[in-house]
Length: 283
Image (cartoon, rainbow, N blue to C red; front, side, top):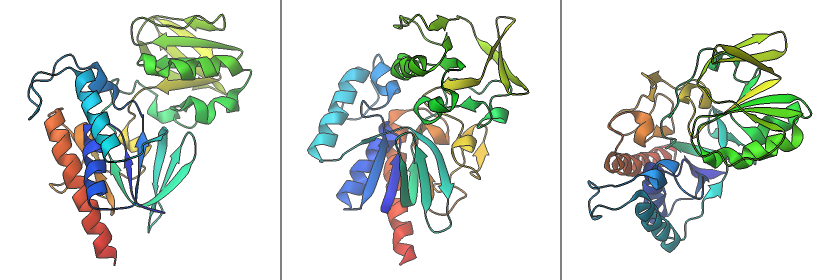
């Protein structure tokens, strides 16, 4: 069991990892090895101390070099649930299950808010993880709503096992050329269910399938962590980045505005120190 699990590889997660490494703690860092999509996509960053008008790609490269220099490993996985087990946390992900005494959530903020009916049917026909749940619907029709190109590998995986896939891309320049994938442009409005059939309303039409995969960089905190306190869509924390659950901390965009790298880095550092203090209190 790890002392700390950091979830998310944005600026807050990076800050937490560097701090925990310096404090010689046994931790696991779970997220995308390519780092945050938001960082890589930024055009210009002009308010980060020490870096003068850099692009997001330049900042990401700087972060990667610092992570490599510190000899920190990222566990490339997609977390789908964090559960309070009383004396530790169980973390479910696409590739496995992890356990830690404390958790730092640096999971960002949803780029696309949940549509009507989405949260109601999570686990009952709506999924956020293609590799976790795809095989449950093998040889059946699937619908996928994807927010960026990063998910195209997962879409191709679903196409390899589905009878066919209805893809609603919420991004430009789709790079999928698969006869089993039907691309439908538009904005999804509502999810409903009739018996075992999931229905997605889009462009005043209704798409029917066995499952709807909502593939996006961040999901609702309330779905990710049952029991966590959320205010206006953000995780509620105090000045020490503590949530309402013992041993659970949050940092970065997920705690609310301003959505700034400087704020995220500061909170990531605070969350790491708070986690270390909490571990000390257990002894």
